[in-house]
Image 1: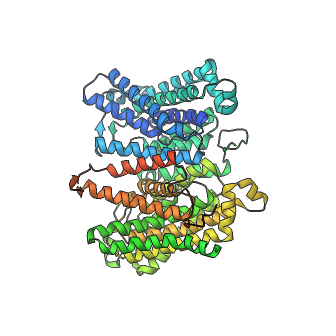
Image 2: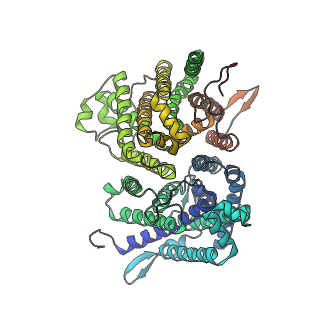
Image 3: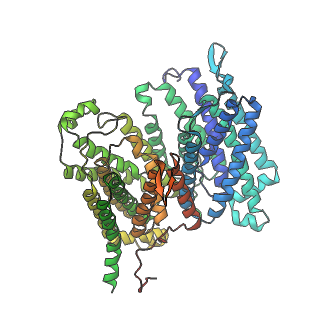
Length: 301
Length: 335
């Protein structure tokens, strides 16, 4: 199978890592969608902000852990500000209006980054050693690939425990199922939404760390294309439930990593076309998502 | 009385376009470009409006029809002698064919319409977020193909040597044509049926309207207009794949939303208002004198201001500056 596709173990590991990172982004987007019915197009710009924090930390020669701390602080603050200034006033609007609004916020943040930091980009190098390969039974695999898969698995596990074993998690799931009834039963809306936004922000910070190790050059459009691909993946999997959304994110990341590594350059330049054509085809057959069982409508009344 | 109201609704946006064009003849040669550009933006935004405004379905993909129109008109307008220089890998048929200005625009419109029909046949089955993401997919695919498939265009190169025929006259005629088509469409029974599906899709299909067919019709009409606008654009300035991608999608959507997505008047007002602001900021980035003081903004301020404006309008006034209504008559306001 691997031989036919001309895939070596290194490509497979990288594809798995990309899938893991995209799965985390998908969870971040899916959590906020669950409680707010809002597709956050500006999610990539949270990642971008975190990446800039890491880049500046390494420019100031901060130790690695301080940079990671700064990254979390910046991304979480920005998430809360975004929730307060944009998401909250938009809560009553239709999903389409909210999508356009977050599209605007995404461009706004990107232009601010362009204005402040310039188009050339900065290098985040403090975690660069993770990019070196280790040799496992004769195969060179980049450390970050292993770290990414493990970190993603741990994050998902922690999230799963949070959602199933804590009161906040229970309330979040209740809110995702039926927000109005949940509120009637005493769930505090702002607290649940704030919780979802914070977790989603923390995931964005983790993604920023993973992505800057793989791509140390941080530019204003950092993670923009990844967000578009992940959004396609999330819709592909099924937005309504967290597990299908995560699977969709992982699937599209894995497929894109695998195809990107396996195809010769003359064909891999058409990778976005192949990917998005596949997404559109799947959506035509299963508009509600690939990994959903029941036929529930995307738009709820 | 009703007839007069209807005519005013058509005349008001047309008058605005003509006024902008006339104003453009008064200013210096260098500022004239801004006026022409704003008129081309009017065509693009009106094309967006025909689908988004009438159907209420979001589309991030219309810039791909603009890009296809630009490619069609551009490839067919570059003089044969200069084609090998900018498009070395062009297909044989395209290498030897060159058409005039007006035919190139018509073919651009045709290309936009045909592709919109093919894409729409599949995509119009989707709704809501799936439709939004799928139209994004169309934009990605078009951008990717035009960028690397060099048999049909310059690929990564810029479309230079296209005759620059889009001046104030051609841009304003183009905008007027777009407004006329959009107006005729929204007054027709098809436009009304589509608007009924926008307000209440289940009720509309209960009285026998096919949501799919009406959306497809509007998608094709707006594809034709977007293709035409792309043709106008490539005759205005040397474009490349990057200038017909996310930034243009963002700016034109912002224009539509700021003006008010559910009326033709809103689309035209939004396009012109945001263009005016954008042009002023572009000047200010190079330093401009305002009330005696020199205003010199850092490069990149434009998108920040437009982004803030769009976000503010969406949060504070989601139906746009015009409230999504057609041009109101002073005395006889329509409820």
